[in-house]
Length: 209
Ligand code: TYD
Image (cartoon, rainbow, N blue to C red):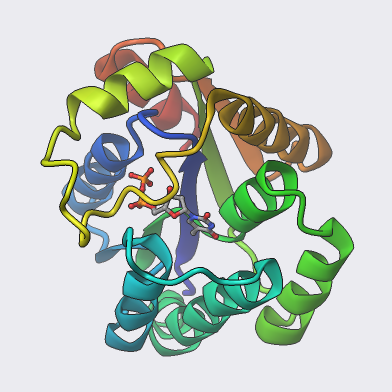
């Protein structure tokens, strides 16, 4: 029997990583084989691309080049890890996927949404998650949380905060983008109020699972 591909989405500080680990344990306790992975990255080639995208000194990409890099990483990830694992009956849980590109590069940075969809079709050929949890949190709460977790020296050029250093209006557009995606894909995307405690968020996720 084929497995399932489940993704977690949301802005900064929404608690995706914590929930991804909880979902992993939940399925493992029920006897499933689980793969926990993330984007950009997940396989060695895509992790190399990740460094170009998320580190402070990773490069000053044009919007098109940046979008192509995200999908180049994603295509490797899907073909060499996600699809084979799902075919073997595993549950694959991924921290971010295509919805993040639509929200960040599209709604956030204003890159053309149709072009993103064309690149998606070309690289992934219609492959998409079986289920997505959108952890939704008001921008101020989310940034506050992620600042708490992220207080390294300002001069650290390898620091993975290129996207977190963007302004509040960017994060507002991002949030609206994710909510728009959820409205357009109600059968796939479940919105969970991430202001709640991790336990309550996980309770809602379990009910949906
Ligand atoms: P990550 O380090 O996993 O941050 P977070 O803990 O917020 O999930 O993600 C790296 C950054 O890359 C994050 O700020 C979101 C951004 N990103 C995009 O802009 N587009 C994408 O397609 C993906 C997958 C991530």
